[in-house]
Image (tube, rainbow, N blue to C red; front, side, top):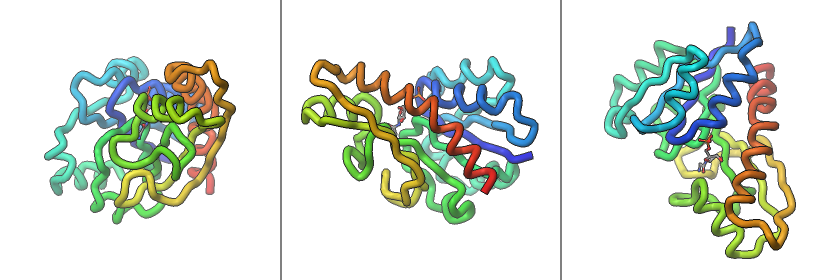
Length: 187
Ligand code: GAR
């Protein structure tokens, strides 16, 4: 059985979509969801599926106990799905090419600290970009800079609001993120 651990900070619609996708798969399981936000929507969303959701503080994330927790699970893939804190270097070092993130823009554009969620979509609309998209990439020590695994673009039309862009992004994320995860687990 291949084990996935998901990190999320917010609503968790991607986390739910990934859990749903692998629900009937006998070889892959989302074993744990971890969040730094006790009020995150992701907690109730995933508990409905019987997946354990644990809350930790930013301080705890960087303590050795946290790495021990991850090591006790031994995930085959760590998936950041709307996770907004910097990810600990110690975990990245122990899980080379096993920590991936989804970013709601075509990196290297609109990446880096402070560029997340609606901030990205507002900037895309303000700059009258003709396209945006999603990027799935490996996580390294810098925000949004690890090697790119997958990108998919779409056309931004002049009437699109930041909310419209967000909705199109989510649609692409729901369609492609679980498939990319499945491929990575097979390779
Ligand atoms: C997603 O669109 C994801 O790409 C983005 O946050 C959203 C989370 O939605 N991630 C980032 O901006 C990371 N820099 P969700 O909580 O409903 O899955």
